[in-house]
Length: 432
Image (cartoon, rainbow, N blue to C red; front, side, top):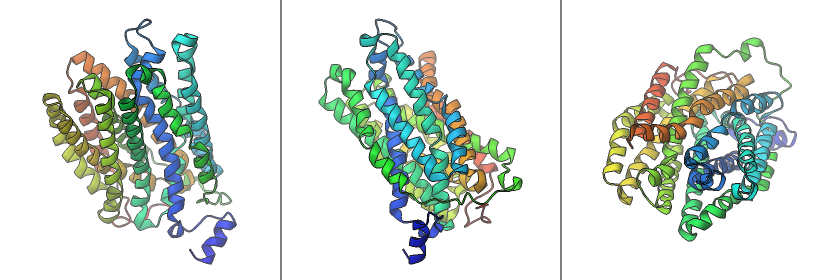
């Protein structure tokens, strides 16, 4: 790094994108991974959490109530997107990222330490819901500022790769949560897992919150808030908003539908908890490897060819993959099918997020992206796992997840086909 860049960083001025050190991108990624690790752990331990807060002595629908509580965390995402996302446009990307991360850490700590229904009665699920709402608020404000930061910190010809860090770290969180769950379900008895094992998984994430806060606090800033934007520079076309919502809906349903495999493998395929968490590890590992490849490929040939290619393959493979898992629910078959779907996930989701972020005006990029992402994930992500379980029970068909995800993939493909290409290699540079 040359002296000019050092002086700019020391003075608190925005760094020129091409000079952002790798360690700075890592700081964004680590914070993102920690937030998603804790958020996803709740989903992975849905069965155990259901028994703790919704015991069979009180209800016969513990798992459904647990998944519904998982979905409740999405209700406050739009509010978090509005408050923290727009704060990222006014005050800067860094303070917004620090705020979202701090709130997430506090919410997870409270959730992990909330006593069970057996100990404090109805107050237990009430506290559970409260902490999930705080968690959703924090995560709703996370993606906008952090993704805007990555786009603005990247050289134009490497924006795809930089933004792929967003999904790569989310998938690292899936991998980490899956590994922790696998170890805990292997080492602990079912009673211990229900009593405190899931709490230990959450507390592992909170242990590194101080590190994440320190790393984010030392990030440079990528916007200069001294420059006022004109109304034209703040305008976001309605067509772009609609298409962006369709893209995020598709990516979100696919992500949460695939992550449901931990519960699906136990509930529909009758696999043990340890083997079910092994499938989650496979998802995380496959996607982590494919995410940067997807980003780099989208920089080279464009965002649209990468995503549309994945859409076509997924439409052909999703239902057959689940049919094979149902017919032969062995470890090798389930892990193999999930690995393929996890790799394809990267080529579906990363180009969608990159396209939306590049297409938004810089003056409102953090807030607009946060709101679009939060609304899409609230309406569709928060209901995906609940809907899959409900449809499976209603139809009696374990193919319900595949059909639900396939429909979302098709809608995302239509939206991407209607979006203009945003990659600099194939299009004029977007508004910076």
